[in-house]
Amino acid sequence: MELRILRYFLAVAREESITGAAESLHLSKPTLSRQLMQLEKELGKQLLIRGNRKITLTEEELKPR
Image 1 (cartoon, helix red, strand yellow):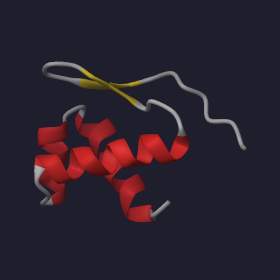
Image 2 (cartoon, helix red, strand yellow; image 1 turned 120 degrees about the vertical axis):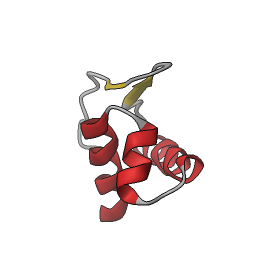
Image 3 (cartoon, one colour; image 1 turned 90 degrees about the vertical axis):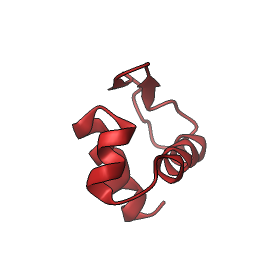
């Protein structure tokens, strides 16, 4: 896991939007979305609930493997 991807996750959580986070990070929306899906796959947990206009965090608890 890269620190850069965690920064992406934090930006999306803060902005509650892929679009807003992508703009603040100077990334394209598809690139950011792909990176977040890869993070979720790597952790084996859904981290974000993707709504039509807003993204919210799940209540998933990450437990050490």
